[in-house]
Image 1 (cartoon, each protein chain N blue to C red):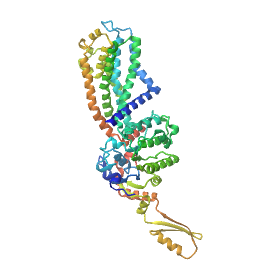
Image 2: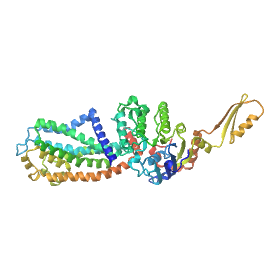
Image 3: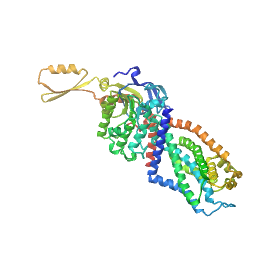
Image 4: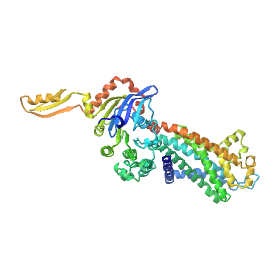
Length: 313
Length: 282
Protein backbone atom coordinates (compact mmCIF):
# COMPACT_ATOMS: atom_id res chain seq x y z
CA UNK A 1 0.00 0.00 0.00
CA UNK A 2 1.45 3.35 -0.96
CA UNK A 3 1.19 6.26 1.41
CA UNK A 4 1.07 9.69 -0.16
CA UNK A 5 0.56 13.30 1.01
CA UNK A 6 -2.71 14.04 2.77
CA UNK A 7 -3.50 10.35 3.10
CA UNK A 8 -0.77 9.94 5.66
CA UNK A 9 -1.81 9.24 9.22
CA UNK A 10 1.79 9.41 10.41
CA UNK A 11 4.61 11.32 8.77
CA UNK A 12 7.97 11.41 10.51
CA UNK A 13 11.21 12.91 9.20
CA UNK A 14 14.62 12.86 10.79
CA UNK A 15 13.31 12.02 14.25
CA UNK A 16 16.05 12.09 16.86
CA UNK A 17 15.90 11.43 20.56
CA UNK A 18 18.69 11.98 22.99
CA UNK A 19 18.77 11.28 26.73
CA UNK A 20 21.69 13.17 28.22
CA UNK A 21 24.53 12.41 25.86
CA UNK A 22 23.09 9.17 24.52
CA UNK A 23 21.23 9.11 21.23
CA UNK A 24 18.51 6.52 21.25
CA UNK A 25 16.91 7.47 17.93
CA UNK A 26 19.19 8.44 15.06
CA UNK A 27 17.06 10.14 12.44
CA UNK A 28 13.97 7.99 11.98
CA UNK A 29 11.82 8.39 8.85
CA UNK A 30 8.42 6.77 9.03
CA UNK A 31 5.27 7.16 6.97
CA UNK A 32 2.03 5.36 7.66
CA UNK A 33 -0.92 5.73 5.28
CA UNK A 34 -4.49 5.98 6.52
CA UNK A 35 -5.96 2.55 7.08
CA UNK A 36 -2.57 0.88 7.07
CA UNK A 37 -1.47 -1.60 9.72
CA UNK A 38 2.23 -1.21 10.42
CA UNK A 39 4.36 -3.11 12.88
CA UNK A 40 7.51 -1.78 14.48
CA UNK A 41 9.66 -4.80 15.04
CA UNK A 42 12.92 -4.80 16.90
CA UNK A 43 14.85 -6.12 19.88
CA UNK A 44 14.46 -4.53 23.32
CA UNK A 45 16.20 -1.21 23.38
CA UNK A 46 15.80 -0.58 19.67
CA UNK A 47 13.70 2.51 20.41
CA UNK A 48 10.21 1.19 19.63
CA UNK A 49 8.59 2.47 22.80
CA UNK A 50 10.30 5.85 22.51
CA UNK A 51 8.96 6.32 18.98
CA UNK A 52 5.45 5.34 20.01
CA UNK A 53 5.53 7.71 22.99
CA UNK A 54 6.65 10.57 20.77
CA UNK A 55 3.87 9.83 18.29
CA UNK A 56 1.35 9.68 21.14
CA UNK A 57 2.48 13.11 22.31
CA UNK A 58 3.71 11.77 25.66
CA UNK A 59 7.31 12.71 24.98
CA UNK A 60 8.92 15.54 23.02
CA UNK A 61 11.52 14.61 20.39
CA UNK A 62 15.01 16.12 20.45
CA UNK A 63 14.87 16.90 16.74
CA UNK A 64 12.94 16.12 13.59
CA UNK A 65 9.45 16.74 12.31
CA UNK A 66 6.53 14.63 13.46
CA UNK A 67 3.00 14.86 12.05
CA UNK A 68 0.24 12.61 13.33
CA UNK A 69 -3.28 13.04 11.89
CA UNK A 70 -2.22 16.44 10.62
CA UNK A 71 -0.84 17.80 13.90
CA UNK A 72 2.40 17.80 15.83
CA UNK A 73 1.61 15.50 18.78
CA UNK A 74 3.76 17.58 21.13
CA UNK A 75 1.47 20.59 20.67
CA UNK A 76 -1.75 18.95 19.45
CA UNK A 77 -4.96 19.97 21.19
CA UNK A 78 -7.41 17.80 23.09
CA UNK A 79 -9.70 17.42 20.07
CA UNK A 80 -6.84 15.61 18.34
CA UNK A 81 -6.59 13.36 21.38
CA UNK A 82 -10.14 12.12 20.75
CA UNK A 83 -9.09 10.73 17.36
CA UNK A 84 -6.13 8.78 18.73
CA UNK A 85 -6.37 5.56 20.71
CA UNK A 86 -3.62 4.36 22.99
CA UNK A 87 -3.25 0.95 24.52
CA UNK A 88 -1.23 1.47 27.67
CA UNK A 89 0.61 -1.17 29.59
CA UNK A 90 -1.41 -1.08 32.76
CA UNK A 91 -0.03 -1.94 36.10
CA UNK A 92 -2.29 -1.34 39.08
CA UNK A 93 -4.27 1.78 38.24
CA UNK A 94 -8.00 1.94 38.99
CA UNK A 95 -7.79 -1.25 41.05
CA UNK A 96 -11.03 -0.50 42.91
CA UNK A 97 -13.01 0.24 39.77
CA UNK A 98 -15.12 -2.41 38.13
CA UNK A 99 -14.49 -3.26 34.49
CA UNK A 100 -17.78 -1.89 33.17
CA UNK A 101 -17.62 1.13 35.47
CA UNK A 102 -14.19 2.21 34.25
CA UNK A 103 -15.01 1.67 30.57
CA UNK A 104 -18.22 3.66 30.95
CA UNK A 105 -16.32 6.45 32.72
CA UNK A 106 -13.43 6.70 30.27
CA UNK A 107 -15.84 6.32 27.34
CA UNK A 108 -17.94 9.24 28.53
CA UNK A 109 -15.03 11.61 27.85
CA UNK A 110 -15.54 10.95 24.12
CA UNK A 111 -19.24 11.81 23.89
CA UNK A 112 -18.73 15.39 22.57
CA UNK A 113 -16.41 14.12 19.83
CA UNK A 114 -18.88 11.83 18.05
CA UNK A 115 -19.26 12.43 14.32
CA UNK A 116 -21.73 11.15 11.77
CA UNK A 117 -19.48 8.29 10.72
CA UNK A 118 -17.78 7.64 14.05
CA UNK A 119 -20.10 6.96 16.95
CA UNK A 120 -18.25 7.84 20.14
CA UNK A 121 -17.89 6.23 22.55
CA UNK A 122 -18.31 2.63 21.48
CA UNK A 123 -21.24 0.91 23.30
CA UNK A 124 -19.64 -0.42 26.47
CA UNK A 125 -21.33 -3.81 26.67
CA UNK A 126 -20.56 -4.64 23.03
CA UNK A 127 -16.96 -3.68 23.65
CA UNK A 128 -16.74 -5.86 26.76
CA UNK A 129 -18.10 -8.74 24.71
CA UNK A 130 -15.65 -8.05 21.88
CA UNK A 131 -12.58 -8.21 24.10
CA UNK A 132 -13.90 -11.25 25.95
CA UNK A 133 -14.46 -9.77 29.40
CA UNK A 134 -18.22 -10.37 29.65
CA UNK A 135 -17.80 -12.61 32.67
CA UNK A 136 -15.57 -10.10 34.44
CA UNK A 137 -17.65 -7.00 33.63
CA UNK A 138 -18.74 -6.53 37.24
CA UNK A 139 -15.43 -7.49 38.78
CA UNK A 140 -12.97 -5.19 40.49
CA UNK A 141 -9.99 -4.54 38.23
CA UNK A 142 -7.54 -5.52 40.96
CA UNK A 143 -8.94 -9.07 40.78
CA UNK A 144 -8.28 -9.51 37.05
CA UNK A 145 -5.50 -11.76 35.80
CA UNK A 146 -2.65 -10.26 33.81
CA UNK A 147 -4.17 -11.39 30.52
CA UNK A 148 -7.58 -10.00 31.47
CA UNK A 149 -5.99 -6.65 32.35
CA UNK A 150 -4.39 -6.54 28.93
CA UNK A 151 -7.79 -7.16 27.34
CA UNK A 152 -9.11 -4.26 29.38
CA UNK A 153 -6.17 -2.11 28.21
CA UNK A 154 -7.12 -2.89 24.62
CA UNK A 155 -10.79 -2.09 25.31
CA UNK A 156 -9.82 1.28 26.83
CA UNK A 157 -7.61 1.99 23.83
CA UNK A 158 -10.44 1.56 21.34
CA UNK A 159 -13.42 2.83 23.34
CA UNK A 160 -13.26 6.22 21.62
CA UNK A 161 -13.36 4.56 18.18
CA UNK A 162 -10.01 6.05 17.21
CA UNK A 163 -8.90 6.81 13.67
CA UNK A 164 -5.40 5.89 14.68
CA UNK A 165 -4.50 3.29 17.27
CA UNK A 166 -1.16 2.79 19.01
CA UNK A 167 -0.40 -0.58 20.53
CA UNK A 168 2.84 -1.04 22.42
CA UNK A 169 3.48 -4.76 22.90
CA UNK A 170 -0.25 -5.47 22.96
CA UNK A 171 -0.12 -9.22 23.40
CA UNK A 172 2.58 -9.49 26.06
CA UNK A 173 1.16 -11.93 28.59
CA UNK A 174 -1.61 -13.27 26.32
CA UNK A 175 -2.24 -16.99 26.05
CA UNK A 176 -2.56 -18.38 22.50
CA UNK A 177 -6.34 -18.11 22.50
CA UNK A 178 -6.33 -14.51 23.71
CA UNK A 179 -3.69 -13.76 21.13
CA UNK A 180 -5.83 -15.15 18.33
CA UNK A 181 -8.87 -13.19 19.57
CA UNK A 182 -6.74 -10.08 19.62
CA UNK A 183 -5.50 -10.64 16.09
CA UNK A 184 -9.10 -11.03 14.91
CA UNK A 185 -9.96 -7.79 16.69
CA UNK A 186 -7.13 -5.91 15.00
CA UNK A 187 -8.23 -7.23 11.62
CA UNK A 188 -11.81 -6.17 12.21
CA UNK A 189 -10.76 -2.69 13.39
CA UNK A 190 -8.71 -2.31 10.28
CA UNK A 191 -11.27 -3.80 7.85
CA UNK A 192 -14.56 -2.52 9.28
CA UNK A 193 -13.55 0.89 10.62
CA UNK A 194 -10.48 1.67 8.55
CA UNK A 195 -8.53 2.27 11.72
CA UNK A 196 -4.87 3.00 11.12
CA UNK A 197 -2.82 0.85 13.46
CA UNK A 198 0.78 1.14 14.56
CA UNK A 199 1.93 -1.59 16.88
CA UNK A 200 5.19 -2.74 18.34
CA UNK A 201 6.10 -6.31 19.02
CA UNK A 202 9.05 -8.58 19.12
CA UNK A 203 6.90 -11.49 18.13
CA UNK A 204 7.74 -12.18 14.49
CA UNK A 205 4.75 -14.37 13.76
CA UNK A 206 2.49 -11.66 15.10
CA UNK A 207 4.14 -9.00 12.96
CA UNK A 208 3.69 -11.17 9.89
CA UNK A 209 0.06 -11.99 10.69
CA UNK A 210 -1.14 -8.49 11.43
CA UNK A 211 0.84 -6.01 9.45
CA UNK A 212 0.51 -4.69 5.92
CA UNK A 213 4.02 -3.45 6.40
CA UNK A 214 6.86 -4.17 8.80
CA UNK A 215 9.43 -1.62 9.93
CA UNK A 216 12.47 -3.16 11.57
CA UNK A 217 14.37 -1.07 14.09
CA UNK A 218 17.79 -1.75 15.50
CA UNK A 219 19.72 0.64 17.69
CA UNK A 220 17.50 3.60 17.01
CA UNK A 221 17.57 3.27 13.23
CA UNK A 222 15.13 1.92 10.68
CA UNK A 223 17.05 -0.93 9.12
CA UNK A 224 14.25 -2.26 6.92
CA UNK A 225 10.79 -1.18 5.83
CA UNK A 226 8.49 -3.21 3.62
CA UNK A 227 6.06 -6.10 3.34
CA UNK A 228 7.09 -9.49 4.65
CA UNK A 229 8.01 -10.59 1.10
CA UNK A 230 9.91 -7.44 0.29
CA UNK A 231 11.96 -7.79 3.44
CA UNK A 232 12.71 -11.41 2.75
CA UNK A 233 13.79 -10.57 -0.78
CA UNK A 234 15.88 -7.68 0.43
CA UNK A 235 17.95 -9.62 2.88
CA UNK A 236 18.40 -12.75 0.89
CA UNK A 237 18.30 -13.22 -2.83
CA UNK A 238 19.09 -16.86 -2.25
CA UNK A 239 16.39 -19.49 -2.21
CA UNK A 240 16.76 -23.05 -1.06
CA UNK A 241 15.56 -25.85 -3.36
CA UNK A 242 14.95 -29.31 -1.93
CA UNK A 243 13.88 -32.39 -3.83
CA UNK A 244 14.14 -36.17 -3.89
CA UNK A 245 14.98 -38.51 -6.65
CA UNK A 246 14.48 -42.17 -5.97
CA UNK A 247 15.80 -42.64 -2.45
CA UNK A 248 18.18 -39.69 -2.56
CA UNK A 249 17.41 -36.26 -1.10
CA UNK A 250 19.01 -33.07 -2.46
CA UNK A 251 19.41 -29.46 -1.30
CA UNK A 252 20.67 -26.61 -3.45
CA UNK A 253 21.01 -22.87 -2.87
CA UNK A 254 20.43 -20.63 -5.83
CA UNK A 255 19.77 -17.01 -6.63
CA UNK A 256 17.46 -17.96 -9.51
CA UNK A 257 15.19 -20.70 -8.28
CA UNK A 258 12.91 -20.62 -11.31
CA UNK A 259 15.68 -21.29 -13.82
CA UNK A 260 17.20 -23.92 -11.59
CA UNK A 261 13.95 -25.81 -11.17
CA UNK A 262 13.17 -25.65 -14.91
CA UNK A 263 16.56 -27.17 -15.61
CA UNK A 264 16.14 -29.76 -12.87
CA UNK A 265 12.80 -31.00 -14.16
CA UNK A 266 14.08 -31.50 -17.69
CA UNK A 267 17.12 -33.47 -16.57
CA UNK A 268 17.00 -37.13 -17.51
CA UNK A 269 16.84 -39.78 -14.81
CA UNK A 270 14.39 -40.79 -12.10
CA UNK A 271 11.42 -38.39 -11.63
CA UNK A 272 11.84 -35.46 -9.22
CA UNK A 273 9.50 -35.72 -6.21
CA UNK A 274 8.89 -33.68 -3.01
CA UNK A 275 10.04 -30.50 -4.72
CA UNK A 276 10.21 -27.53 -2.31
CA UNK A 277 11.45 -23.98 -2.90
CA UNK A 278 11.90 -21.93 0.19
CA UNK A 279 12.78 -18.28 0.56
CA UNK A 280 14.29 -16.86 3.74
CA UNK A 281 11.60 -16.71 6.43
CA UNK A 282 10.77 -13.50 8.24
CA UNK A 283 12.68 -14.81 11.19
CA UNK A 284 15.82 -15.38 9.10
CA UNK A 285 15.38 -11.91 7.64
CA UNK A 286 14.88 -10.26 10.96
CA UNK A 287 17.76 -11.93 12.73
CA UNK A 288 20.05 -11.28 9.83
CA UNK A 289 19.14 -7.59 9.64
CA UNK A 290 19.38 -7.02 13.36
CA UNK A 291 22.62 -8.92 13.70
CA UNK A 292 24.17 -7.14 10.76
CA UNK A 293 23.23 -3.81 12.27
CA UNK A 294 24.09 -4.50 15.86
CA UNK A 295 27.41 -5.98 14.89
CA UNK A 296 28.55 -2.66 13.47
CA UNK A 297 27.15 -0.58 16.30
CA UNK A 298 28.16 -2.47 19.38
CA UNK A 299 29.07 0.82 21.09
CA UNK A 300 25.46 2.00 21.07
CA UNK A 301 24.34 -1.07 22.92
CA UNK A 302 24.93 0.58 26.28
CA UNK A 303 22.49 3.42 25.57
CA UNK A 304 20.03 4.73 28.15
CA UNK A 305 17.01 3.11 26.60
CA UNK A 306 18.38 -0.37 27.02
CA UNK A 307 18.54 0.24 30.71
CA UNK A 308 15.02 1.65 30.75
CA UNK A 309 13.58 -1.28 28.88
CA UNK A 310 15.42 -3.87 30.85
CA UNK A 311 18.30 -4.89 28.66
CA UNK A 312 18.49 -6.85 25.46
CA UNK A 313 17.91 -10.58 25.39
CA UNK B 1 -15.66 25.52 26.30
CA UNK B 2 -18.62 23.17 26.00
CA UNK B 3 -16.23 20.25 25.73
CA UNK B 4 -14.31 21.41 28.79
CA UNK B 5 -17.56 21.69 30.75
CA UNK B 6 -18.40 18.18 29.66
CA UNK B 7 -15.04 16.95 30.96
CA UNK B 8 -15.71 18.72 34.28
CA UNK B 9 -19.06 16.96 34.56
CA UNK B 10 -17.42 13.61 33.82
CA UNK B 11 -14.81 14.50 36.45
CA UNK B 12 -17.46 15.19 39.09
CA UNK B 13 -18.92 11.75 38.36
CA UNK B 14 -15.42 10.34 38.66
CA UNK B 15 -15.00 11.91 42.11
CA UNK B 16 -18.36 10.58 43.28
CA UNK B 17 -17.43 7.09 42.05
CA UNK B 18 -14.08 7.33 43.84
CA UNK B 19 -15.85 8.35 47.05
CA UNK B 20 -18.27 5.42 46.66
CA UNK B 21 -15.28 3.11 46.38
CA UNK B 22 -14.01 4.49 49.66
CA UNK B 23 -17.33 3.86 51.36
CA UNK B 24 -17.30 0.28 50.02
CA UNK B 25 -13.74 -0.44 51.15
CA UNK B 26 -13.91 -1.44 54.83
CA UNK B 27 -10.26 -0.63 55.62
CA UNK B 28 -10.50 2.90 54.20
CA UNK B 29 -13.83 3.54 55.82
CA UNK B 30 -12.39 2.45 59.13
CA UNK B 31 -9.41 4.75 58.78
CA UNK B 32 -11.78 7.67 58.05
CA UNK B 33 -13.59 6.94 61.30
CA UNK B 34 -10.37 6.54 63.25
CA UNK B 35 -8.69 9.75 62.05
CA UNK B 36 -11.79 11.88 62.36
CA UNK B 37 -12.81 10.13 65.56
CA UNK B 38 -9.59 10.96 67.44
CA UNK B 39 -10.74 14.56 68.13
CA UNK B 40 -14.02 13.17 69.37
CA UNK B 41 -12.22 11.02 71.93
CA UNK B 42 -10.14 14.00 73.06
CA UNK B 43 -13.25 16.13 73.43
CA UNK B 44 -15.13 13.39 75.24
CA UNK B 45 -12.32 12.82 77.74
CA UNK B 46 -12.29 16.56 78.47
CA UNK B 47 -16.06 17.03 78.44
CA UNK B 48 -16.14 18.45 81.94
CA UNK B 49 -13.26 20.91 81.44
CA UNK B 50 -14.14 24.57 81.11
CA UNK B 51 -11.93 27.24 79.58
CA UNK B 52 -10.11 29.16 82.31
CA UNK B 53 -11.94 32.25 83.50
CA UNK B 54 -15.13 31.48 81.57
CA UNK B 55 -18.08 29.13 81.74
CA UNK B 56 -17.53 27.87 78.18
CA UNK B 57 -16.61 24.21 77.94
CA UNK B 58 -13.34 23.14 76.34
CA UNK B 59 -15.26 20.84 73.99
CA UNK B 60 -17.29 23.62 72.38
CA UNK B 61 -14.18 25.77 71.89
CA UNK B 62 -11.98 22.97 70.54
CA UNK B 63 -14.50 21.29 68.26
CA UNK B 64 -14.58 24.14 65.70
CA UNK B 65 -10.78 24.10 65.71
CA UNK B 66 -10.76 20.39 64.92
CA UNK B 67 -13.28 20.95 62.13
CA UNK B 68 -10.96 23.62 60.76
CA UNK B 69 -8.11 21.15 60.87
CA UNK B 70 -10.16 18.60 58.91
CA UNK B 71 -10.94 21.19 56.23
CA UNK B 72 -7.30 22.31 55.98
CA UNK B 73 -6.15 18.68 55.88
CA UNK B 74 -8.26 18.23 52.74
CA UNK B 75 -5.04 19.25 50.97
CA UNK B 76 -3.71 15.80 51.85
CA UNK B 77 -6.18 14.21 49.40
CA UNK B 78 -5.02 15.76 46.11
CA UNK B 79 -1.39 15.64 47.25
CA UNK B 80 -1.57 11.92 47.87
CA UNK B 81 -3.74 11.09 44.86
CA UNK B 82 -1.59 13.02 42.42
CA UNK B 83 1.63 11.45 43.67
CA UNK B 84 0.31 7.91 43.62
CA UNK B 85 -1.75 8.24 40.43
CA UNK B 86 1.28 9.53 38.59
CA UNK B 87 3.20 6.48 39.74
CA UNK B 88 0.65 3.77 38.98
CA UNK B 89 -0.42 5.03 35.56
CA UNK B 90 -3.83 6.50 36.48
CA UNK B 91 -2.66 9.93 35.35
CA UNK B 92 -1.38 8.53 32.07
CA UNK B 93 -4.81 7.02 31.39
CA UNK B 94 -6.32 10.45 31.97
CA UNK B 95 -3.80 11.98 29.60
CA UNK B 96 -4.77 9.53 26.87
CA UNK B 97 -8.43 10.61 26.70
CA UNK B 98 -9.61 14.00 25.41
CA UNK B 99 -9.59 16.64 28.17
CA UNK B 100 -8.85 13.78 30.50
CA UNK B 101 -6.60 15.79 32.81
CA UNK B 102 -9.40 18.34 33.34
CA UNK B 103 -11.70 15.46 34.23
CA UNK B 104 -9.10 13.80 36.39
CA UNK B 105 -8.31 16.90 38.46
CA UNK B 106 -12.02 17.67 38.84
CA UNK B 107 -12.43 14.10 40.04
CA UNK B 108 -9.64 14.44 42.60
CA UNK B 109 -11.04 17.72 43.93
CA UNK B 110 -14.56 16.30 44.08
CA UNK B 111 -13.45 13.17 45.87
CA UNK B 112 -11.26 15.06 48.34
CA UNK B 113 -14.14 17.48 49.08
CA UNK B 114 -16.59 14.64 49.66
CA UNK B 115 -14.14 12.85 51.93
CA UNK B 116 -13.58 16.05 53.88
CA UNK B 117 -17.31 16.66 54.30
CA UNK B 118 -17.71 13.04 55.37
CA UNK B 119 -14.91 13.44 57.92
CA UNK B 120 -16.53 16.62 59.24
CA UNK B 121 -19.84 14.83 59.69
CA UNK B 122 -18.13 12.08 61.69
CA UNK B 123 -17.05 14.77 64.12
CA UNK B 124 -19.89 17.27 63.85
CA UNK B 125 -22.89 14.98 64.27
CA UNK B 126 -21.74 13.52 67.61
CA UNK B 127 -20.56 17.03 68.53
CA UNK B 128 -24.06 18.43 68.10
CA UNK B 129 -25.57 15.52 70.00
CA UNK B 130 -23.03 15.15 72.84
CA UNK B 131 -21.86 18.71 73.40
CA UNK B 132 -24.82 20.67 72.08
CA UNK B 133 -22.69 22.50 69.53
CA UNK B 134 -24.88 24.43 67.11
CA UNK B 135 -24.80 27.37 64.76
CA UNK B 136 -27.11 30.32 65.28
CA UNK B 137 -30.07 29.56 63.02
CA UNK B 138 -30.13 29.44 59.24
CA UNK B 139 -27.78 32.39 58.80
CA UNK B 140 -25.30 30.68 61.14
CA UNK B 141 -25.38 27.45 59.16
CA UNK B 142 -25.09 29.31 55.84
CA UNK B 143 -22.06 31.12 57.22
CA UNK B 144 -20.68 27.72 58.18
CA UNK B 145 -21.17 26.43 54.62
CA UNK B 146 -19.50 29.56 53.24
CA UNK B 147 -16.44 29.05 55.44
CA UNK B 148 -16.28 25.35 54.51
CA UNK B 149 -16.25 26.27 50.82
CA UNK B 150 -13.71 29.04 51.32
CA UNK B 151 -11.55 26.73 53.44
CA UNK B 152 -11.61 24.00 50.78
CA UNK B 153 -10.76 26.58 48.12
CA UNK B 154 -7.80 27.70 50.23
CA UNK B 155 -6.54 24.18 50.95
CA UNK B 156 -7.17 21.93 47.93
CA UNK B 157 -5.04 23.82 45.36
CA UNK B 158 -2.14 23.69 47.79
CA UNK B 159 -2.55 19.92 47.82
CA UNK B 160 -2.36 19.87 44.03
CA UNK B 161 0.85 21.88 44.11
CA UNK B 162 2.41 19.56 46.70
CA UNK B 163 1.28 16.42 44.88
CA UNK B 164 2.75 17.73 41.64
CA UNK B 165 6.20 18.47 43.00
CA UNK B 166 6.90 15.65 45.44
CA UNK B 167 8.62 12.55 44.19
CA UNK B 168 6.45 9.78 45.57
CA UNK B 169 3.27 9.09 47.53
CA UNK B 170 5.36 7.66 50.37
CA UNK B 171 6.74 11.15 51.01
CA UNK B 172 3.17 12.47 51.34
CA UNK B 173 2.24 9.63 53.66
CA UNK B 174 5.13 10.32 56.02
CA UNK B 175 5.55 14.09 55.99
CA UNK B 176 1.86 14.78 55.45
CA UNK B 177 0.87 13.40 58.81
CA UNK B 178 3.69 15.31 60.53
CA UNK B 179 2.50 18.53 58.92
CA UNK B 180 -1.11 17.88 59.95
CA UNK B 181 0.06 17.08 63.48
CA UNK B 182 2.14 20.26 63.56
CA UNK B 183 -0.78 22.34 62.36
CA UNK B 184 -2.99 20.80 65.01
CA UNK B 185 -0.46 21.80 67.65
CA UNK B 186 -0.07 25.44 66.69
CA UNK B 187 -3.47 26.36 65.32
CA UNK B 188 -5.22 27.40 68.47
CA UNK B 189 -7.11 24.19 69.11
CA UNK B 190 -5.40 23.22 72.35
CA UNK B 191 -3.54 26.40 73.21
CA UNK B 192 -4.69 29.90 72.29
CA UNK B 193 -2.13 31.23 69.84
CA UNK B 194 -1.52 34.26 72.06
CA UNK B 195 0.32 31.85 74.38
CA UNK B 196 2.65 30.57 71.64
CA UNK B 197 6.06 32.12 71.01
CA UNK B 198 5.45 35.16 68.79
CA UNK B 199 7.14 33.67 65.72
CA UNK B 200 5.10 30.48 66.00
CA UNK B 201 1.95 32.56 66.36
CA UNK B 202 2.78 34.32 63.12
CA UNK B 203 3.34 31.04 61.32
CA UNK B 204 -0.01 29.80 62.56
CA UNK B 205 -1.70 32.98 61.36
CA UNK B 206 -0.13 32.64 57.93
CA UNK B 207 -1.68 29.19 57.44
CA UNK B 208 -5.33 28.39 56.62
CA UNK B 209 -5.91 25.99 59.53
CA UNK B 210 -6.07 28.64 62.23
CA UNK B 211 -8.37 30.91 60.24
CA UNK B 212 -10.81 28.19 59.22
CA UNK B 213 -11.02 27.18 62.88
CA UNK B 214 -11.47 30.82 63.86
CA UNK B 215 -14.35 31.13 61.39
CA UNK B 216 -15.98 28.02 62.80
CA UNK B 217 -15.60 29.34 66.35
CA UNK B 218 -17.41 32.47 65.22
CA UNK B 219 -20.21 30.27 63.89
CA UNK B 220 -20.53 27.90 66.84
CA UNK B 221 -19.60 29.96 69.94
CA UNK B 222 -21.54 32.72 71.68
CA UNK B 223 -20.46 36.31 70.90
CA UNK B 224 -18.88 36.66 74.33
CA UNK B 225 -16.32 34.00 73.38
CA UNK B 226 -14.69 36.50 71.02
CA UNK B 227 -12.88 37.74 74.09
CA UNK B 228 -10.74 34.58 73.94
CA UNK B 229 -9.47 35.42 70.43
CA UNK B 230 -6.53 37.58 69.40
CA UNK B 231 -7.52 41.23 69.87
CA UNK B 232 -10.77 40.15 71.48
CA UNK B 233 -12.55 40.00 68.12
CA UNK B 234 -13.52 37.38 65.50
CA UNK B 235 -11.41 39.21 62.88
CA UNK B 236 -13.72 38.11 60.06
CA UNK B 237 -12.26 40.40 57.36
CA UNK B 238 -8.80 39.06 58.14
CA UNK B 239 -10.09 35.49 57.93
CA UNK B 240 -11.67 36.07 54.54
CA UNK B 241 -8.55 37.89 53.32
CA UNK B 242 -6.06 35.19 54.37
CA UNK B 243 -8.17 32.29 53.05
CA UNK B 244 -8.87 34.14 49.79
CA UNK B 245 -5.16 34.81 49.38
CA UNK B 246 -4.42 31.08 49.74
CA UNK B 247 -7.22 30.22 47.34
CA UNK B 248 -6.16 32.70 44.67
CA UNK B 249 -2.46 31.92 45.05
CA UNK B 250 -3.16 28.21 44.84
CA UNK B 251 -5.38 28.56 41.81
CA UNK B 252 -2.68 30.56 40.04
CA UNK B 253 0.20 28.22 40.86
CA UNK B 254 -1.57 24.83 40.76
CA UNK B 255 -2.39 24.77 37.02
CA UNK B 256 1.19 25.70 36.13
CA UNK B 257 2.90 22.97 38.18
CA UNK B 258 0.17 20.51 37.33
CA UNK B 259 0.61 21.07 33.60
CA UNK B 260 4.35 20.68 33.93
CA UNK B 261 3.94 17.49 35.92
CA UNK B 262 1.33 16.04 33.53
CA UNK B 263 3.53 16.77 30.54
CA UNK B 264 6.26 14.62 32.04
CA UNK B 265 4.06 11.60 32.66
CA UNK B 266 4.86 8.84 30.18
CA UNK B 267 4.73 5.11 29.92
CA UNK B 268 8.44 4.96 30.58
CA UNK B 269 8.10 6.92 33.84
CA UNK B 270 5.33 4.60 35.01
CA UNK B 271 7.46 1.60 34.06
CA UNK B 272 10.37 3.04 36.03
CA UNK B 273 8.17 3.47 39.11
CA UNK B 274 6.92 -0.07 38.65
CA UNK B 275 10.46 -1.43 38.59
CA UNK B 276 11.31 0.53 41.74
CA UNK B 277 8.19 -0.77 43.46
CA UNK B 278 9.15 -4.33 42.55
CA UNK B 279 12.58 -3.75 44.03
CA UNK B 280 11.08 -2.41 47.25
CA UNK B 281 9.01 -5.55 47.55
CA UNK B 282 12.05 -7.82 47.27
